[in-house]
Length: 189
Ligand code: GRF
Image (cartoon, rainbow, N blue to C red; front, top):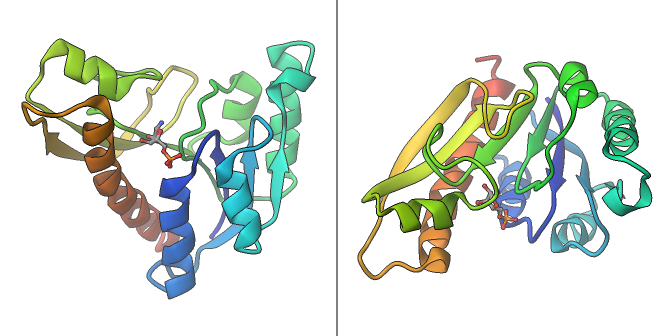
């Protein structure tokens, strides 16, 4: 199973996938490429260090969102992936991308969707005062963190939690769920 992984930041969840592929925990999965929407991400840097092909389709280089979306779609298609994984990719992709990867664009989100979608899922859950949040792996459609849910797991919020401490605990679970989901998909499940 060939995957392209998209990142915008540090890529610690991506690193867990790289490690799982390297150790053989994730069998039959090949990371064809890792791409970012901006220059200078640690996610791309660590992928290059691991010998993985990388690319940047820099959002700021394009006149409008449609042009950027077209370039990203073409670039991802060029790797002929079975799945594209958004792992901390902080841009909403457009219809052209979603149509090109219909049902094969996977996203992870640090909250129990449909609660707390958007860029601040951890902060919003804390601010609301919920006692339980978690993470979600889902097939992404054209909405913001919407689409069929593949896996979810709850994470309890402690009274002493900050956004950072809670997000770190969620990411530990998120990595496990992402790897389990990819293993399922690689087995045709
Ligand atoms: C993850 O929690 C992801 O769901 C969110 O951003 C985080 C990415 O972290 N959108 P990292 O770049 O993998 O460290």
